[in-house]
Image (cartoon, rainbow, N blue to C red; front, top):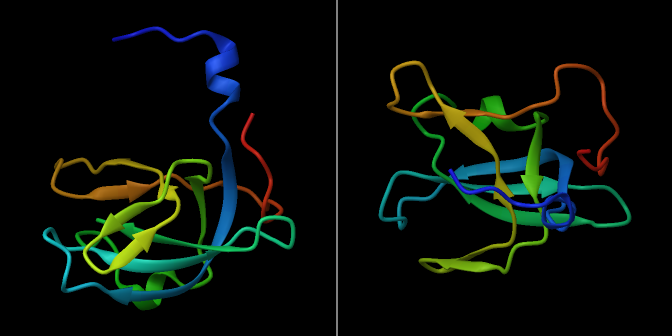
Length: 113
């Protein structure tokens, strides 16, 4: 495990977003969904390719609040540009991902601290 200082942690911008649209992404090398996530009026909507197909269906994702890193360099995933990294952890079987989500009501666009 490498150790970082607090200043480096502060440079990572993790925000609450709400998934507005989710669809299958068959062109991805590994099974994934295309997500359109609303981060509020100050940040707007961002796209993400997320490998979360083991535990979620697209219709279950719409309206779900998630945590995502919004200040990473965009990444080309096939013919789709992923602008943010949605956060998650391995499920109990380590076969899929469980999304990192706020467990109480939160405001879209709020920063993790």
